Length: 399
Length: 149
Image (cartoon, rainbow over all chains, first blue to last red):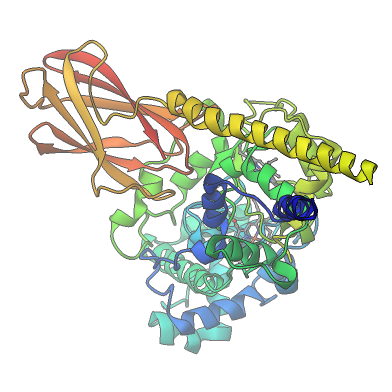
């Protein structure tokens, strides 16, 4: 009799122990492994920017990134919005530079791995992206002729050691750009083709230096990565690599019933694609149709991969060559953001529509239809505990 | 003492029930997922039987999130290569209500009925569909390939 009760007690203990340990199917384990930062492949070279991995170019790029002089009135730099101690973003629903913009500042960890840049992907390289805020009247509000003169005056020697001799800028207007004020446009149009090309060349190199710097901004390992590594290697999780019951439930939902992993996949939790998820527009901001309006812009950009300022050969331009040009699903489609670090940098979405992760999860559960186009997300039956668990899991990507 | 036994008995009953449920789940799950999968054959007759089409990654392996080229090989029923075909490609993920993230094109004819399809990109694992509209001197036909990653 005593032996039987011993056996029974042992059985109960085994069952209880089994419950305490997270239990994942092989398929789940595979998906979890695919999300771990250790799976992030090494950064590929960027053949369109032959200075991408030149340390002196990255050093100059870093100087320019933080330099307030890189703006019309000397008050705004990239780092005004992309703050180094805030995951290179600014915690605002919409960014503020020289003026108030219409979109949220994007964090920059791992950005060099993206095929498209901005919430709508209207630029196709990191170096072409950097040229956009410099001339945007709401951001740095400068013009390319002024930047060329500024580089020559402030960083002429450093520039020439990397990129070779600066063009002769004497006789060129102090302010000129095809995208600037009326006076700047007139000045630009009055320049010769060779002069414009010389200014564009310096301008492209500014972008290439900044891009070289940005390539060093990479995501750091989190609690989730330590948990995933232990799960995959079968090691006993220790310290903060142990997940609470809610965190395990949240992870299971994320890769299972809640379908988050269909778009937020891979070690950066993004498919690098564009999706309409029914995020509502912000009242008072100009109409924003997302990806559908961006394709024409990237095709028209003289600094795109097909343009004259690309280094290397055209085989690097596959993304632009095979871009989807028009499809109903591009309407109000936005780039899937990485979720690493998201928990500690509200607000969320392309114009800061939601102020907490609870609101984000409530949005996915409800899956309201899009104001225009078709939302790809479908309503989810989630209990209060499950919603909390999803948020708890997302937090493990910030710790 | 008697009540302790009752608890143990109840515990044993519960454990048996749990084991039973687990057994049912275990025995039914794999079978149902096996029958649900789409036809993933890489060679098939086109919808109206005009051609035999094969579709395979050019480098043998499929890598998620990368631009890739695949080969579409077109033969007549008699096995002769189909030359000079015009090929239009569409597709998407039927379970996610979205199309292809890129617009792949037939960029090259490699001889022997083989066409290079460039610009394919699979951004996630799951069930993808690729639909080809083929028109050649022998006529026009369509074929659908399922790719499950």
